[in-house]
Length: 219
Image (cartoon, rainbow, N blue to C red; front, side):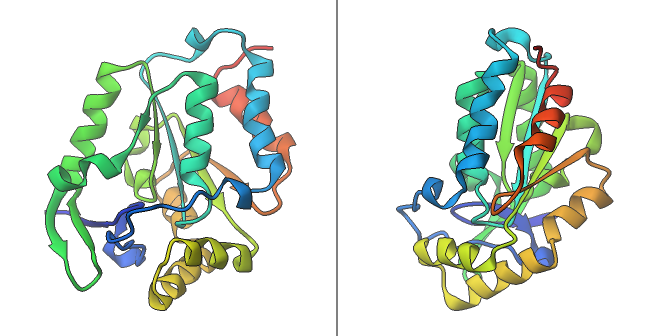
């Protein structure tokens, strides 16, 4: 049985050391910590389309990255601008769980159950947005676009994690994961079609171009 580890905010392979505590009940908003140009990128998507129905059928957009890089914020923005429903894994952790890992204070998730859940959601709606740092572990053939969020300013990332009340050890683990770019490396190893966005300093030009091409948006 393939096992993943999932917490309140995200889930990830055990070997990637990205398990997140589940006792955090009030997730801090991180919109203010993401630079304005990142928000502008996805607001400007509207300039390429006037109808929400223009995305392809059965399209899966995944957003991955170290906890605190802005996945949920970006997913909600895309949900509003494109009209695609967001698959929030947090709601499904109990049914996806193999067990609760008391040592890491998180759920151990069954990968096959996770895979089946995503397949079911894709079949029932023309477009799905999935934000999770296990999202890139899905089969390449299922994914139309893989957005990997990074944060090159580790001090900013550290502050975001502190606001979530992560333990010092958990903060250190996530900072290490960001330093070694675990999610990006794994996504590329699995052959995902990757678009990388640095939420600390990325310019909008390249990502807008990639979004136009991959989401089939029109001028």
